[in-house]
Length: 257
Image (cartoon, rainbow, N blue to C red; front, side):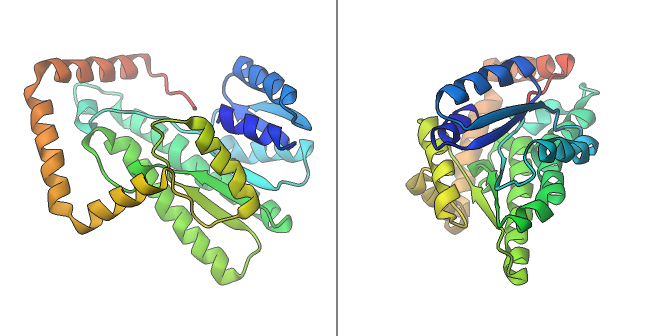
């Protein structure tokens, strides 16, 4: 998100940046202005509190009455097997709800409240998704399920808007970010101009993984099963996962990235 803000700044955009941390937002604002943004406004917001998103829209429109791009890029990223969250962790149900609020329901609610504004401006909704929303993996059960939900909702919304012949676009950018985040940010900003319906990055890796899973599910399962066997037999890895999940749940702090 930070790098994408700088890419938009370099293109001379007017930005409204939101996150929970005011200090981090102020730092990004200062850097974005140095990189050429025409204006940068910041609004602190916890997107796990979906009931506040209507008021969030009012604050945004008070700054900029016309919205051209809504970039949905925030996420909570729990990387652990889902079964590591089951008993004895009593907070697991609330933790799960919070992850879905941040990763899914806030995306849907932000889309709902800004949709009329974006239709009026012939604007865009840019949604950063993940390969975890295309291909399941045992360490990404909770995170991956939120991205599957995001993909399902926004693919359907694309079809609704097409049927309605709307000027407003949705874009999904599944990304397998193992490398240059600057390139990912560049692709997101470039999509604002070219307005493709979908963007894969890196293209070859995403398309190969998507095809491999769909056309060779048995081989995919064999690979995962062998990884899972190794994982289950390695006490050290199990202990690391259990300790990590216990720390997360005990502290109960989920960040908006």
